[in-house]
Length: 280
Image (cartoon, rainbow, N blue to C red; front, side, top):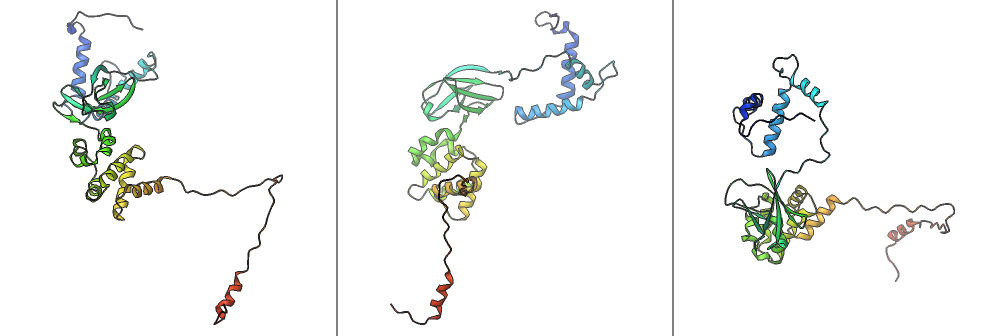
């Protein structure tokens, strides 16, 4: 433990060392201000900067930052086995479009949870949505305003019932599907049952890795195959092991009789080739 010594509220200047450390962090790691596309990317960059800072000498000493950390670590308690869950929890309700609203943005949930009372856990970079303690949806947190964030998988069960809506469904329009899916859709949309086949192919992502489904679609397109059943069969051929029937092994005390069948002599059929006529 440590001996507490607190400063007055809003009086950080009473602990000059803390203020100086804040200044040091700003100069060493945030000058110039870094740019990252996500919090994970920023954390990876910051970890690399910290690792390179380990060899810096501690002021007014002969040891490095890495050496000082080893000394301090001997007096530290181990980290808990599970990471601390840092989130803000708030109740939300999904609307008829299976969307919840948080900070003027809309996030999708599966259509089976439309018009439900839900709970949203807001993390620094993510949102997790629960129904009676069950996780039903996750999204990357959006820091803009007035945006719709969809997971198209949330709407596939409904689109399977209403395949005529596929071309106009916003979740699919905003989905960044690889081009091969659009090629498959172009060949499906003009035939009976084609839209349902397309939705069923997207549902395969629940069973198989998306990259595997994508590769299989390329194979089926090259072969001119645009039916769901055929695509699924190609997937199974890629994933299932070969079916081989193992040989039966009987012990010496087995009651199953041993029957040996002599192989027939097939050369006798060669005589038929030498005869020019056959009497019926």
